[in-house]
Length: 541
Image 1 (cartoon, one colour):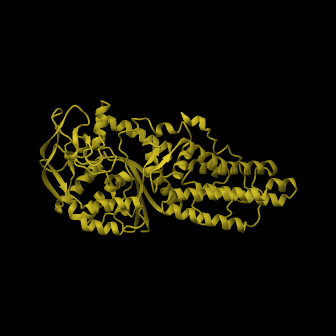
Image 2 (cartoon, helix red, strand yellow):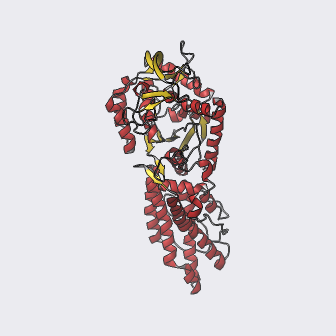
Image 3 (cartoon, rainbow, N blue to C red):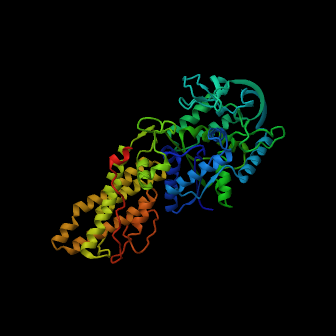
């Protein structure tokens, strides 16, 4: 069995439309990495899907006054549109509300229970007198005791990032019925003995290599504060039912069941799922926003390690910071941001893919504006890439017909420059460093443009140096072929259009070095423009 590559993208809640923050925070980078790995000939399983349980779905359904199943289906359909429209190449974009997922969670719970890692505790939990029911933590809203934010949830404050318990909130009330005050009453829940995993998890975190600073900092913060046993059941109707007598009216906490969705979706995707999930010779990369890091660096691996059952833990946890829009948080309620159901009205998916990766919030929160978007598309995609392809094809067709002109030996100076950048691009993609990848890709486009400007094939034609002109144009066609290959993970539609210029379909395998693959005399077609210039006025609305 050769080395395998397991790639997962965080599972977005199906409680709203997806926006550019979701796209750059997990969906797009994971797709680019998966496409790159496949182009390198690696054995890849690329998994994503919708996280359908927990309070976000229940609260959303209540606010839209519809059954939770219908609500989940409504937004899952919108998420599937995004997967299709933005060319996300999942092996399966699954979901957590399946019979297979429930079966897996029940099996895993039984194993943890049999190993003595589950404990029943009576605790004091928030209770809404008006609604006559216990409230899960996300159903409780109040003022954060740490920063004073007045819309903190019962499990966390999204403003300062503090992990909270509902009884810590000041002036707590129900998220559904704000007029209903919340009181604390006794109830029983099942707890995962996370505290027992402190030393084992610390050693595991210390053994991880190449994690972004954001991910390591968050994991160590939890460990430094000391791991506490955490409840894994909730007083809800919607979710995976608890398979233990006396808990028939409860479901599992969404963050107990959701990360295992990667496994249950894999089980549905391929009968060979265990060759990734139970294989030490597999490299596992997870992609997510920083708000999901604690669950993926603490809770999920702690459960995997506690089971002592050869589960594959994450090797590379690629965590992204937040992308803001026009200097403020992306928000449906304030209308700030670009939501993906409307983004394609502004520009094609390739433009969003490239521009967002060029602005990826890898080290800090970043700010994205439509001015920046237009500048990137116009300069890089329309200017450096699109214009080069168009000029080469039109100039060659006008002077030498619709076949690739005769060429000579490879231009060694050009090859050396391209190979340096190709090695840089390959290294960056392998290390999941996406902003640097775009810089290297742009540089390859730039080298080709410089080559054509310096050699001036139009002047060679004018001066009657036919052999010189055809040699330069042949080299330019070889560069166009290279463009298709190195661009394919990032802008797959454009790469396919470039590939289709030639009558013979050349594969888009990842190049290890610059080479001549296009034969002299091969037929080609002058393509439509690959990209259209974006006028800033048209984006302002």
